[in-house]
View (cartoon, rainbow, N blue to C red):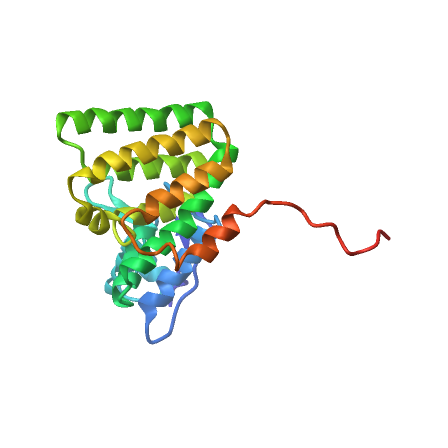
Length: 266
């Protein structure tokens, strides 16, 4: 019996993977490859070995390898391309994958509109605080430009919810935190405020644009307290959640004063 070839990324001879012998072999294979990606042993842009070679390395059939690759593609960790230069290429997961996972979870748990608003409060009060501290002049200029686009669209009678989504996505970029950006992607699906805004009628878009502009003005002043108040008013508009969320808002509005330490200096 001939020895199996060393597991490798395409063009790199190094032992990365081990043969599997469990009932759900495809899951074990996917987990090995996932771990190699997350630990940096395989990097974005790398091409995995062909299915035939991976099957030899793992000691399984090509069908099992194909199942594992489908699983990894569904996770957003690889992209399978066809053709002469095709293969399984490692990719960086996008915020849309985070959003889809959150959406599925929330649909399955029968999340209420009230829960959505409160979740948005938690995420966006933090986001706007980070943006106050970290947003560059370019970030703020682009947010203002989005507000101007919104006003132009209102005047032309073609304002759409995508403009509002773009504003919140650009605000998240101003926070300069990749995880926040991923969470914000869910605002286009499971955490969308659109169902609530539809109830408000024709004035909803005009109110949204004005509120977005006030948020930008608070960011320009680097006034975190004002930015949070404007964001809270924006998200709570048209809801009956002021009482439910009062304690949360009170915490955010409280002064950030460091209390004297009770410990004695050593």
